[in-house]
Image (cartoon, rainbow, N blue to C red):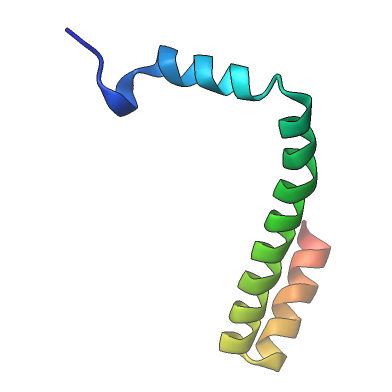
Length: 68
């Protein structure tokens, strides 16, 4: 049975390995993936805080700081 598209894992692993061996690509990922992750977390936390309101958001933050 032939493998198609999304289910051809050998093809995906070969592409992933080839793209991760390029030093420029690695540097771009180190800088921009971290920045993008921080931005997404910031926007998501701002959205959650605005939906909860100041009082409940502050309590949730305090709980997470002490429990995690």
